[in-house]
Length: 209
Image: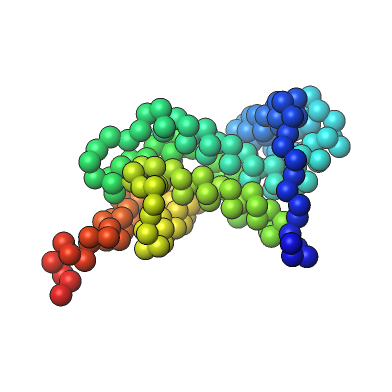
């Protein structure tokens, strides 16, 4: 283990997990009502019915809490998509449809979306594990929509670019610099990388020698 590595935390008990769920729910409720500024640790503790010190043992800062809230929201989306997977034969279209479904879910809670995205933007190295988990869930959502269990390095690279574009599109929409229609165009465009990075793409692409 390196000097910067941290020992793995023991699994939460059922009671601890229930307390954590209450904290995340309180965070989402406050953010949904008033955005990033409305999420104050003391108010979260009161809303969740836990002591302030207890809250800080679970989440050392507001940024940790809001990134974990985004992780929780994405995990809920992932579960919903498992129950209602995207239709269609084309992987690129399935991914585009999936990301737009996720986008519209966030669109229904713009203050919450803004708070979570701002937390991701402000996150420093201390929040890296939580940020990495958000990225892993987003990757899993995209790969599930593609129908891939064993992607190639090129396909994983395409997934990362799609993730970055989705995140950027969310930021530009939240800041009022892009319409929903423009977001859809950007998502549809970047998802074409899925076709380009198919293992058989070089054989079927007429532009290749």
